[in-house]
Every structure is written in C-alpha cells, then in structure tokens.
Length: 82
Length: 82
Length: 155
Length: 155
Image (cartoon, rainbow over all chains, first blue to last red; front, side):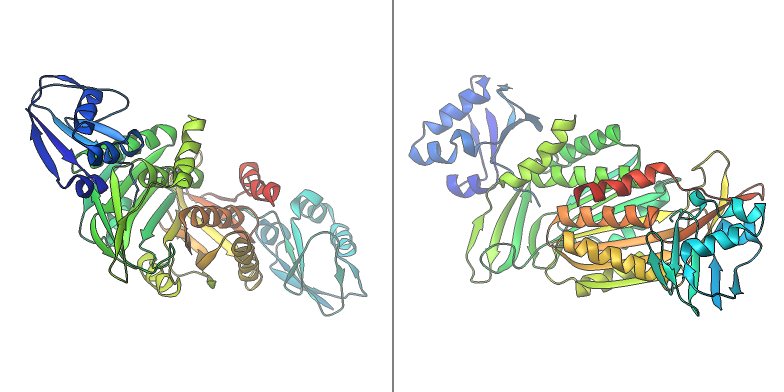
C-alpha cells in the first residue's frame, strides 16, 4: 500500500487530494502509467508535461525513482512560484 | 572674487575648508595651475590624479570648465563612497 | 551561516525579521532584502487574491537546499526566508528574503538567486482569484525558467 | 516615480522608510532594499568608526540624477535613498536604498545600480578611525570603479 498526494491543479482535475493504493513495487514511471490508464481524464491531467516531479518519502526525485511499498508519493505539477 | 571649497583629504593637506580668491576669469585648469604654483605641498595635494572633479556653482563638471567671477568652486578629491 | 526558513499562512513583519537577522549576521556590511507582493494588475483581468499551496516539509527542505547552495557560491553570514501560503489579497506580502554578507555584490547575487529559485523551482502552486469571482491555476512561466537557468549556466 | 533623497547625520529606521515607500509605490510587486553598515574588520586594522563627509546640495543632486537615470533604465514606481554622514560607529547603518517596481529583476538591477554609483561616483569622502585611535582618509578602490563601469558598458 502506498499513499499518493496530489497538488495544485491535479487536485481539482482528479477530484482528490490523496489516495491509498495497493502497490506491488515498481518505479515512478510504473505508477504514472497505472494512473494514466484509469481513463482519458487521468491521462490528460498526468500527461508528461503536466508532471514536474515525483516526490518519494518527502524527497524530490529527478528522473525515474523506485517506489517501495509503504511509501508516500507526491505528484507535483509544474510549480508556479510565489 | 571666487569662493573655493575643499573636501576630504584636501582639507587636511591644505589646512583649510575654504578660501576666497581674487579672480580675473579663466578655466578650472587655470585655477588648478594657480593653486599648484603655491608650493610643493599644493602641487602634491592637487596633482591631476588627486583631483576627481571640479564643481562650479554646485554643478559637477567633467573636463575643463569656465569659472566666472563670483563663482563657488568645489575641488573634489577622488570619492570613496559610503 | 545563520539560516531560518518558514512557510506559513501568517503575514510577516519585515522590521522584526531584519532585527533578528542582524543580531545573527555578525560583522556583515551588506543586507539585501526582497519583498514580493500580490499585484492587482499583473495580467489581463484585475486580481482579487492569490491562493498559494505547497508541500509541507518538502517545500521547506527544498528552500533550505537552495539557501545552502547560495552559501556555497557567496560568503553569506545570515539568511531568512518566509514564504506565505493560503489566500493572499492584493497588496499583501507573499515572500520575504533577507541576506547578509560582508559585501554588497554577494548579498545582491544571493538574494536574486534565491528569488529566482523560489519563483521557478520551489514546490508552490498558485491559483489566481479575479475580482469577477472567477479563478484559475497559474501555468509555469518560461521567463522564470530562463531566470533560474542563468544560475545553472554559471555553475 | 516617487523619489526621495536625504543626506544627513541621523540614523534611519528602515521599517518607517519602507512603509512610506510602499504607500507611494502603487501596484508594485517587488521591493528591494539595501542597507550598508560599518564593518569592524573590513581592512587590516580593527575599525572603531567611519567619518563621512559630502558636498551639501551637490551630493543630493548627484544622487537624484543617478536615480532618474535608473528610472529610465527600469520601470520603477518608487525610490528612497538615505545616506548618512558624520561619525558612524561600527555596526551603524551608512546607507539605505529602497526600490519598488512591478517585477523583481528591475528592482534588483536598479538597487544594485544605485549602490554601485553611491559607492564610486557620488561625492562622499570617508576617513577610517581605528580602535588604536589612528585614522586615515580612504583611497578610491579600483574594484568599485569596475562595478560602476559595468553599467556604462551596457548603456
């Protein structure tokens, strides 16, 4: 089981702040593919140019990251500053 | 008659803040030559690299400036900021 | 380097932060401060407020990482960053950056470096609320990416 | 652009000046402030104080000329300069520059431009008083001339 957090416009586009998900292990790309396969809305909201970074256990990852069972995964849309 | 004001190290090197001087007309270079001719101390203190700018009637001059009778002339050593 | 980073809803009082910083800044000759405020006429429609959100914990860590990077590039003695989140009405302060250093060039460069990063890389998301009641999420600006890119080119 | 320039002996209170400036700055999104302070260990001997003098009237006019030049280069909405003279002990503020603009890059550039000029071209002369009681007039620094020269190369 992993916990996924959504930020910015993703919260509205996906209709949720967070969710829990059964997880057999894999990478951040595996997770994004799995989520995009939920339907056109998900594929559009999580298109590659809409995902800036993935955060695993509070650490911002550059590129593809391993996600262990039990992890907290934040999905960050492009940041827009203050 | 013109009034001459000295600033920074010039006040100490020349032993005065200001003075009045009879003036028949001429340029800032004429005035500096006249002052330098007062002696070695004056020539050293007012050497070309020790005079940053001449101010005539409160206007900073770049290069040689005309000095009319009755003018206030400030002689500025190189500035050293705040 | 003394460093303090806060992300919060509450407003900041720059005079208070400046006093705290100067008490920690040692023999610093230069203090540079930046304050960002919500503008009413930044875009096409008159703005009523900004809504900012962040990733609690992660955002503070990112800002600290950036501040330590600044301290490696320039000899800083103290640095204070406050970034606000939540609903911020037009005219309110959004961000305060204070940097103390021995010399002015280092203090200016570090403050601008921090601001470029805060505007382009730190995990903040911004929704604009207009005076007609409508609102939308701001999209990332290419010009801000270019500003932050300057620093990478120099690294 | 709202502009206010003061050369005086009295200390400045940056919070007060900031409030005044913001009241005049309109819809400015960016405020950059610089404060210079007397350093105790800037040179080889520990310093007790600086003694600054200026050319009353002429110095203020020069600073105003420079501020108007900054306003031609960058879209500024307000600018405040206070430069102190007289005996300034270690730790005391020497100069305060506040610049408000719509965007941060303009505010940073203008504040740095003003400081480079104040340090290199404005009619101020500085005598250093050391803790052993000795004192001497500071000579012009080449590095400050180079800093101000940057701006002329861009003009």
